[in-house]
Structures are given as structure tokens and as C-alpha cells.
Image 1: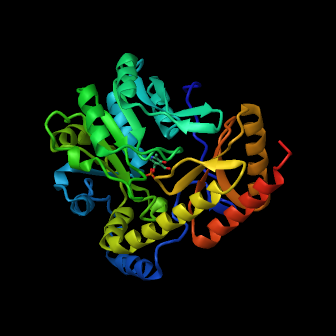
Image 2: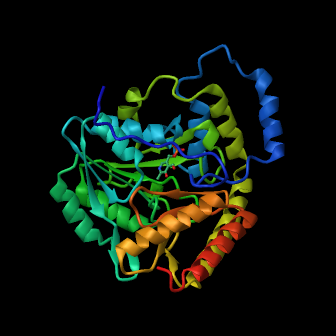
Length: 363
Ligand SMILES: Cc1ncc(COP(=O)(O)O)c(C=O)c1O
């Protein structure tokens, strides 16, 4: 056994769940009815069709690209694992951001590789700010001599997002090192880099997407890897056989048939995100970074890190006592809150407001 393996803590599943950036609402009843009608025709006794051909085609159509640019997987997580196991061997380096999605560390450590990071979140006299100087990022990435560059865009947990123009600059400058954009949160109003995938000089670009967030399908584990057809042909043989079960595959096709419904839900989440950020802006002691996903990073605007840590500890405790489950991080002076339904967000804001007011003169 590898006793150095980075562990990943599965999310808590009690309380008002605003900790895993899932959709707060289950699939609509009508759609669940359609899934039920599908069941009698499903061959539970047979292995799934190995390539999830229908789902690949349908997702490709959804993105407006050819089907041979897509692999479907058991969550985008499995697609990230496929990329890491393909490109990071023992002693190799993955270059990413600090902070970013912790599963990268888990898979890299399983390969006995190393992780180096560009410091994205900088603490300053107001608490935090985002530091992403693209030329500096490229220079530092080159210095790290990585075998793979991977980061989430929009970034989890900061919310920072870069444009396709910047993605193009990064992939071109780092060519031929593979560059992966993890676009798990791109459905929440961002501009995807998918349009770049067939551009000459960007053959090293890979993108991952998921149905777990904006498409409310986290429980069925459906994600995608997207790249140019040559890359897809090269990496597909490394995908575990039958990696996506028959039900998830068929259900994901149904969900994509109802994309309009989920786009409407997304619009509501975006309105709620604006409302929450506005409310937090009015608070005296708590701040948030600009959000681009379905979550908000919250931190105390105290210049002293010790005070920020104490404040976050108290705030986490208050959320817990009130049955609201948010994402906190060991020894970090910030927390992340998923943007939920209006009534859920009202509860969050009410608690934060009273905490903010009670902080006067305490910390
Ligand atoms: C940045 C990022 N990438 C990938 C994932 C994995 O998503 P899934 O495996 O559900 O597709 C998550 C999940 O929280 C995430 O935050």
C-alpha cells in the first residue's frame, strides 16, 4: 500500500447541503417519469455498450462538435484520473493552481508524481485577492517542467475564470505539454475553450466537463473528456472498459434532451449568485471573491490571518449549529458556499448577516 497517498474526504450528506456544489433540486418529476419508462427496455443482465456511443454523440451535438472529440466517463473525475494516469508517471510533475480541486493531488500521489502550484489566492491587507498574471503563470509553469498542466476554470474554490483567449495563450506557450481545462463549472455563465480544440498549434489542449453540477446528475456520475479526434483516439484505449453503466448513460441522454430546463435553472442560480454577492458586499466584516461558478468563496476582511482563522472557525460552527452544511478547509481562513435555491440562500444570508453584526468589536 502507498502510505503517502493523499486522501480525499467525501462530502458530508447531512443538513442543508451547500457543500458540494450540487444542484439543490432533484430532476423534475416529469423527467423522472421518463427515466422510469425507460427501465423495461434496459438490459440489466448485459454489460453496457463499451463506448457509450449514443451519449458521446448526444453530448457532442450539445456542444456543437463532432462525436469523435468526446469520451464519456464515470464522472469528470474519472476523466481527470485518465488524463493524470496517462501523463504523470513516477517523479513527474503536475502543474496546477493553489488552491484547486483536491482530487488532482489524490491521483498524482497514486502515480507517485509531484504537484507544483501557481499561487492564485494571495492574502493581503483586506483578506484575499486573486493573482493570475498570465505571463507569470506561463513562466512559472515552464520553470516547473511539468508533464501535465491542469486547473479548473472556473476555479474551485475561488471562482476565478479565464477567457478562451487566455487559455489559447497558455496552451500555445506550453506546447507540447498537455494542458487540461477542467470546466466542471463552465455551464454557469462562462465561455468554454471547446472552440479552440481544432486550432493548429493547440493539439495539446484537453477539456473535461460534467453533468453533476448544472445538469443535476451528480448521483449518476456522468462526465466527459473532450479534445481533438487524434488525442481522443490515443487516450481512449486507456479508459477502463465498461466505465459508464447502462442506466447512467441512457439517463444522461434523456437529461440532455431537456437541456432547456437546466438552462432555465442555471439562469435562476445566476440571479441568486448576484443577489448573494450583493448582500455579502454590504456586510462589514465578511467578503466574497467574484463568483463564476455555482458557489461563493467567503472570507473575513481582517488583515490578520490569526483573526481570520478564528472568525472562520466561529462561522463554520454557527452554520453547523444551524444545520447548514458548507465547505470548510483544514487550517484555511475561508469557506465555500454553494448557491442553492432562493429559500436556502435566504437562510445562509440571514445567518451571515447576524454573524457579521455580532462581530462588531469581538474579533
Ligand atoms: C473542479 C472540479 N472538477 C471536477 C469535479 C468532479 O465532478 P464529477 O466527477 O462529479 O463530474 C468537481 C466536483 O466537485 C470539481 O469541483
